[in-house]
Each structure stands twice: as structure tokens, then as C-alpha cells.
Image 1: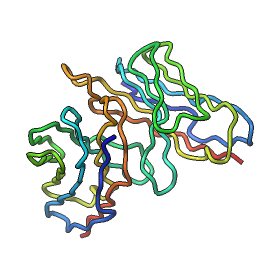
Image 2: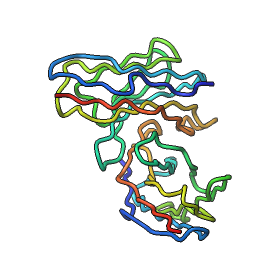
Image 3: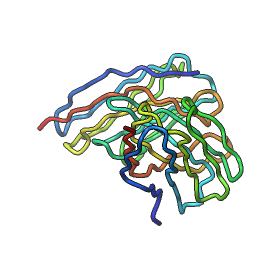
Length: 110
Length: 117
């Protein structure tokens, strides 16, 4: 089963880009990478997902390395409301079981 | 759309009691799942369903049962509650990514906070 490794915490200044790394070196060829975030104890919120190509939406950009062993989530202009725990997730081999790690606690500072 | 709804929001049980956590979605999503989240931890998958009548086990299925008689509802049953099942339970639903069968964006409910004494 693919697993992910993320730094436990990061800081970012408000207005600057937040770059959150994730290692998923055991990922298989057809497994997607998903990013979610969780603010306080609320239900997680979807951010973005990707397979091989870089992806961008209104919230963030996802950069996946060519060998697919790591990826980076980019919040281009972080705000205080982006303070949350960010989870990088891959599935367990059948694209139906998502394995969540401990995530990265991002603090956006004024 | 109400999205994903969960009831109850809070529940206190005694060891050995049984109960059902309710989850419903009105988005016609094929995939539904149940997670538990312990303090300071990520989510762990309990059970999931890829459509009505089809369920499968996740990472931590022991002590829980599920059924999916309709597309909308996916109840989680605790058979005999134990203190180790004290946790926050989240239900989620999604469509599949067209052409791949992989899970698309999951929508989460607000959670049920369960305490087992």
C-alpha cells in the first residue's frame, strides 16, 4: 500500500506562497494523489488531486515530479484562513481506499 | 442540496451498548465511506461502498457493520461499544473520476463525536 510522508508543521507569512511537500515513493502507476485540509475539528475539505500532470484550480496548484515519488501543494497567496492541517493522500492500490497520514499543520502568520 | 448529513452530532454510550450512526447524501454519489479520527491523528477508513448493495472493509473495520440499501444512505452500526471506539466519525461521499474508477472529490459531513464510557 502506498503511504505518504509530510513534515509535521510549517509556517508561512500571510500573502506569501505556501509550498507543502509530500513524499509518496511507493505510489503505483495508476494511483492518484489527493490533497485535503481540515480546519479545527471540521470535516476535511477537498483541495485538488492529480495523477501525472500538474494541476491547478481556484484554490491551489499541485506539482507532481516526473517519477511521481513526490508532490508539492502550492497555495499561491496564503491567508490567515488557510491555517489548517493539510493531508496528502494516496489510495491503497485499488483506487477505492484512501490512506491518510498525520498531515502538515500549516500556520499562516500575519 | 444539503450535501452530506450526519446524525447525531454528539453521542455518549456505555460499554456494550449498540447504536447506529446515520449518514445521508443527496448528490447521487456512488461512493460513500466512513472514517474515524482520534485526537491528533489523521482519518482512518472503516468501511466503504461503491454503490447500493456493495460494501467493503477499510483499514479498521472490526467492531463496525455497514449496509447500503439505497444510494443515499450509508449507516454505520457499532455492535457492542468499547472505550477504544471513542472518536470523531466522519462520513463522506463522491463520484468516480470518469474513465478511471478512482475516487473523485470527497464531500464530508460535519462529524459525529462519540464517547464510550
